[in-house]
Length: 374
Image 1 (cartoon, one colour):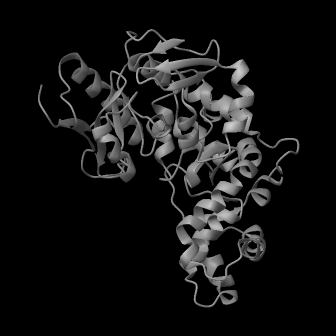
Image 2 (image 1 turned 45 degrees about the horizontal axis):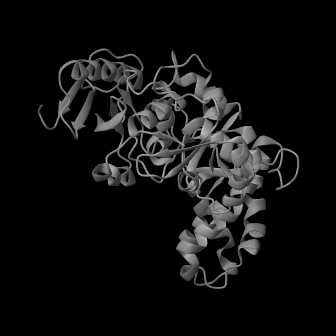
């Protein structure tokens, strides 16, 4: 059995996450290939796509959102993801049991007497009528469950009703409340029921995960998706998968012929937005981040990759730089390990490009690197 080292796993991750080279790929194709982009923070997907696609401009994603070809919805791990319209319709039924299990694991004690099916039936028509916030709908139905806080009802509604957050939320240069409507109302078609045409299958999800994240262990697939019912699907797929082992002896699965670049292939600096799945999409994240830094992702740190690994976090000042800001914008990099020599020069150059992107072309910004010296 082939043993694959950490550095080779890293280069496979970069290649499949579109981070080893920028790609001439449309934004919708990239979102589809990645099986969604983390979108807990409304504007973070723009930076993630900029780091992956050659010539990406915000207007391309804005067009997808306003044209209803891509949506922001709860899916993997019960977190907001930007996905294609087809994936919103096709994957929701596969994830629905997990979404409800997770919301009850958190809220069960705060939802006494609340039947989730009844809550879904009460909330769905209100969301379908027009986009509303979770709080507005929760308050409208709260009379059925005296003593239950509207905030908790709203949290539950976000999972039990198949919703999308609608523009202007998530639109570059705009702002708006987190207003939701149903997938069916927004896209003009219902969620595909499990087993019906158009509905996602667990086997297909595993194959798509491996194409975008592999090689990977079954625990990695579970950690990324949040789904627990995958062992049977993986067992059915095993005859068509390649079986490897990592340096710790873990069994890894992969698609035959999928990209696994030479471990010595150079990896340029890449800036990742908050909660990017290139880091979060594994149970064992050591291929891309040291265990001592793993906890930073929980707080939504934005990471900088140097030679393919997390080497720093980054922020902007002001927090959301715009062309109209009076002071020159700053991209501040807080190094976790020394960044020196040619790597430092490459980071500054890449950072200047990111800062210009985030400020709609301003060239008066500066990149500053703080942290340990070499």
